[in-house]
Amino acid sequence: MRGARVQDTEDEPDPRRWRALWVTLVAGFMTLLDVTIVAVALPSMQRELHASPTSVQWVVSGYALAFALTLVTAGRIGDAFGRRRVFLAALAAFVLFSAASGAAPGIELLVAARLAQGVAAGSLAPQNSALIQQLFRGAERGRAFGLFGATVGVSSAVGPVVGGLILALTGAGGWRWIFYVNVPVGLVALFLGFRLLPRVAPGGRGRLDPVGVALLGAGILALMLPLVLAEGGGLTRVWWLFPAGAVVLLAFARWERRVARRGGQPLLEPGLLTETRGYATGAGLGALYFVGFSGVWLVFALFFQNGLGYSPLMSGLAVTPFAAGSAVAAAVAGRLVERLGRLLTVWGLVAVMVGLGTTALLLWLVPSDTGAWLAAPALLLGGLGSGCVISPNITMTLRDVPVRMAGAAGGALQTGQRLGGAVGTAALPGLFYLTLNATHDDYHRAVGLSVGTGVAAMLCALTVAVRDWHRDRAGGDRSCPPETSHSHTHAGQN
Image (cartoon, rainbow, N blue to C red; front, top):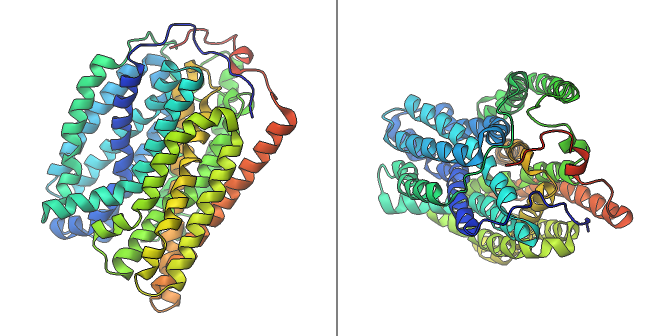
């Protein structure tokens, strides 16, 4: 288990910090839910708007792309200009573009509104983790990150359920209410945010790194665009963007080191990866985990709706045990992470792999929909394990990050998760369709192989977690606290 952490601030804790946290979690839940909730409504959108399959897919993938592109830059803006200010502005924009998405008369305006909505969501997301760093200390920070981790995990898992429920209640044209529902919830959160979020002077000097912003944005775009276009043959047409993106990101890393050496303000400080205890490991583990975690939900939706003929609501309810287990475990794990450390994520990964692996075998080998009923306990086990992975990993990744760079660090962590999720949502459904074509529509084999491949990606995350756990046991406190090693720069804190 890791050593004690340095306090980020000596101020007395804000007495309204827990109420402020719930405001940020509700807003964060909306933005993350919108990554998956829309998927179940794509067929009805396509029919009503007379859109092509490729263009309607941009309603989902365009949001995810804009979300990922914005995270790090928005986190750095929050660090420099104030997280409360950026959070409230982003939340107001998210509400506005949610209404615009619901009212869109055609597919072109809908995609444009979703892109803008994704930028707003990506601007809001890193402020959540940064505000936790700012408002909480000690064991309270672990519990707060536990709730944040539950929000991240559960929002992805319950998206199909909520989307199916809205469609079932609203009938024809009901897809518009998937966006409209954000408006009243967002307005209430905006009002409470104005009242409860603390007014703290920004710690940075209000300067950005425009070259770093351009390089990072170009690199992420190059890596994600082929995945976003995967259904339309993007992986074969623009595969060259992968090596190009890697080269651009290497140039970004070199540029950031140069800016730091000259005493400037880099977009993402190199010390986060090299000197901040646990950050590089946690970011890598999170990206690998989301490859499997994000992809399986689309595979389950395809299997239950196309293979077994379930409605969108029934398809979502079929995976509810996972969401329920994840919510319960994430809240509890936030209290255990201080005592168990990385061991908690090791056991969590084992549980989610056993749960999803068993689910894959049952859906593959058991005929008809009997397998779905038999898989419920295995999905519950997987959810309990997932709750012990996402929440503790966020805590251990960000807990030693200095408050002054918390926004950029949280943005970079979520960018890795979004990149991992993009790989998973392109690869696992792609494997599902390939198996269907090769086996003459054997949906049971397709879901088994696809979910099993997602479990294999989680095995890579387990390898990283086990190695980190062994290093902790062998070396104890391996590095100096980040504030000590960076005390010569940016002394002011948010």
